[in-house]
Image 1 (cartoon, rainbow, N blue to C red):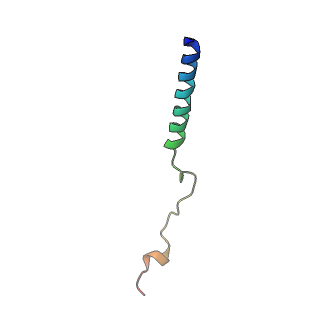
Image 2: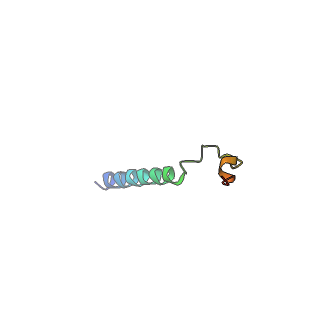
Image 3: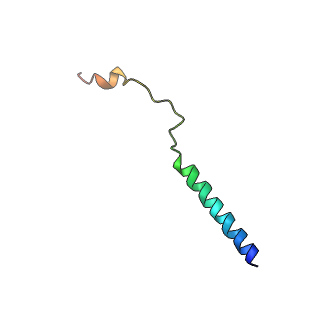
Length: 46
C-alpha cells in the first residue's frame, strides 16, 4: 500500500513539475521582435 501511495505522490509531483516548467517559458519567446520601431509610430506629427 505504501508503494502505491509513493508512486501516486511521485506522479503528482512530476505532473506539477512539468506544468511549472511549461509555464516558466514565455509565450512570445519564439516570435522575432522587430529591431526598429516603425516610422508610423515614431512620426506622430500629423
